Image (cartoon, rainbow, N blue to C red; front, top):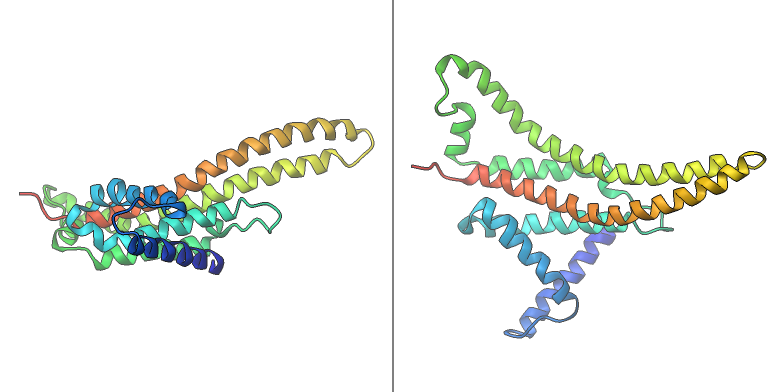
Length: 226
């Protein structure tokens, strides 16, 4: 985590310096590569779900979470360095989900809490059923965030490890040697496919976590419609 946080400080520090020193000019190098992601997070996630007026307040957190998860997922795919599975660890995803829960709770407005404890348009006799469900749902949202990220990141690692184990199991020698060669070819091909899929998952899981966090922030801050 320290490696990734240091990398983020370095990359985005240089990116900020580049904008400051090259005002009005097209970005270059790593700044040019990161700018589309930053604009995507702002224009396609934060603004549509939170609102243009309030999006800037939550953008620093959303961008930090997105790039932290994205870089952590990519680092976990680098072979021969231990296969760091940071976002597949419940302790890490629990902290991220807890931060989302705290920000949502602390920024909830009157409309948000009113809708939670006294849902509009619901008959009075149904309130004793609906209100506990709404309260439980408030706590379930960060739990779902935590489990979704952990399970999806761990699943790919488990599948790849399983096929590596098959090679070792069938390749012990003797009569199983031929089966070991056969399963080795199949497992290697499938692992390459899974590796490519994991590159896509590395981005998708960071995107999904950030999108859901933005939706929760938007629900907590939106005003009542008249």
